[in-house]
Length: 126
Image (tube, rainbow, N blue to C red):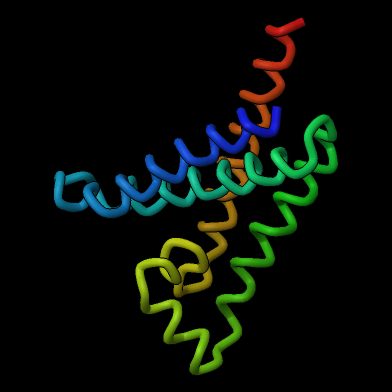
């Protein structure tokens, strides 16, 4: 099961990076690229947590939510080394730069969608 979660997380990462790097150049609207990417980021967090804690859906949901909210609140903390990292592509993709409650909402949507798909897939197997 862990391998499936990791493969799904890698697919979501690839989709998110592609969306962020090519979405604007493809002429997609800013809000679509921004918040679809954040939604995918939330789904990725849940999938990675599920890979570490398979078979514990409530704990996965709680931990993914806590991680996503914590990462967003870390944006309110500024240290020179952290701000320098945030200027890199990896820093932008992993941590972002600006705090936004809209990002938290998008993360929660991604976490909820990934949890729903996980539940549906698990029920389909039985």
